[in-house]
Length: 100
Image 1 (spheres, one colour):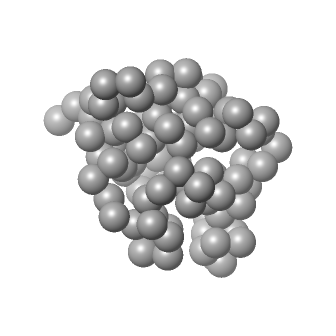
Image 2: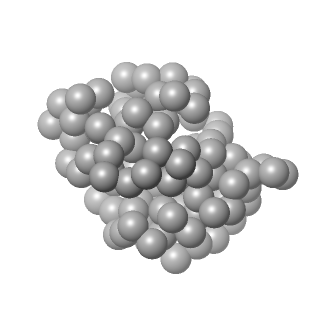
């Protein structure tokens, strides 16, 4: 099954996601991201929550989780990505939220 972005979903976010190694841990169907350590993000837009039910799947929550997963879900294996520019984090979040 292919995870297709919704119309208007940010494709730059896909490129930033892949360029920063996110696909080493996460799978996204239809992309080179084939990781198996983290959750499969192929259908992110259909999720009601992220972080094992800790946060709603809204823009601010997804951006916060990308930047500081340990603050939101202690013990998370995901590294912080707060070293990325805020615009890059927003692009990744936008792309992930557009995956159907």
